[in-house]
Image 1: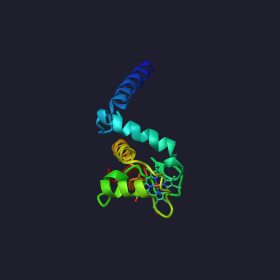
Image 2 (image 1 turned 90 degrees about the vertical axis):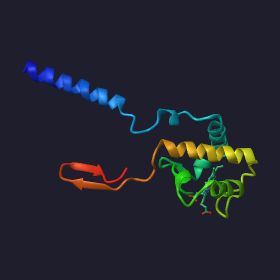
Image 3 (image 1 turned 180 degrees about the vertical axis):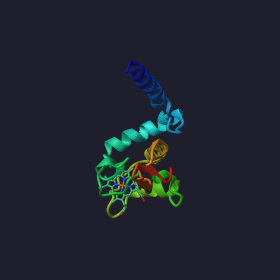
Image 4 (image 1 turned 135 degrees about the vertical axis):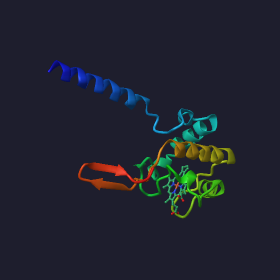
Length: 134
Ligand code: HEC
C-alpha cells in the first residue's frame, strides 16, 4: 500500500513538472506587449472596441472576433487600418489619428500571437478527444 502512495506521489511530481514547464510552443517574449501595443490597448479600452468585438471569444457579438484578424492572409495592415480609421455602416468612425490607428494595429498583432480564437477540429473517440490541427 505504501509503495502505491509513493508511486502516485512520484507520478504527481512528474506531472506537475510538465504542467508548469509547458510553454505551449509559444515564445515567452510574445506575451510582453511593446510600447505601441500598450498604447493601442489603452485606445482599445477607451473606445470600448470590446463592446462589439470579441478577443479569445469574449466580448460583444455585433462585430467579428478579432483575436486572429492580424494573421488572416486576406487581411493585411492596410485592410485593418481602413476599418479602424473609417469604420463602416455598422462600425462607428472613432476619428482616430494615424498614430492611434497604428497602435491599434500593433495591439491586434500582439493579441494574434497570444492565442487562437477558432475552435480546432476534434476527433472524438471512446477514450476522449484530440485536436486534428494546431
Ligand atoms: C458598434 C460596434 C463596433 C465597435 C464599437 C467597434 N467595431 Fe469594429 N466592427 C464592427 C462591425 C459590425 C464590423 C464588421 C464590418 C461590417 O460588417 O460593416 C467591424 C469590423 C472591424 C474590423 C475588420 C474585421 C474583419 O475581420 O474584417 C476591425 C479590424 C475592427 N472592426 C476594429 C475595431 C476597433 C479597433 C475598434 C475600437 C476602436 C472597433 N472595431 C470598434 C463593429 C464595431
